[in-house]
View (cartoon, rainbow, N blue to C red):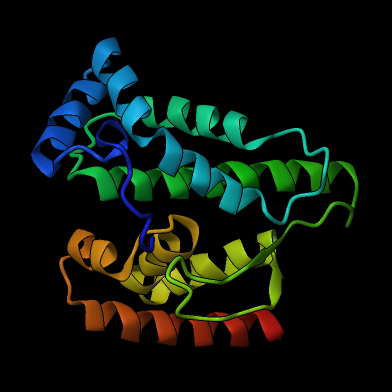
Length: 199
């Protein structure tokens, strides 16, 4: 996610153990914990939503704040989720936002064939991969589903890095692999996706 400078103490993400406790209480639908969790992570959740909305047309019925709210509603509804910490929550939020936009795009496409195509670029949060090509959201989602059938880890890395904005280190910690494995898998997955989407 890059260097954000020195945020004020109250803007810093909570320590891992504290975040996990908030997530356990969030799962139990504790309103106070939910409010605190969202307060602490709101900036990152909004940044993820903005990243997702980059390819959307002006006037899209969903705006970043609405996308965060819809994702929150879906995440609250998850039963028996064993939250591992901040990165896990943000990764799930990113995946949920992508699902919301895909569902929205499918409904829009069903109403008006071929109109309002959403384009997304595959550029990672660290700026390590400079990829300027834009891809149709529905085609990209379909390709990611196929990639997930071949390699679930590689598909998750794309979700976490390109949609969730997690750093290489955060992605590695969440998936319990080395940073080098994340880099290698990301390169392979991107090459596979580009090849698939070029067909």
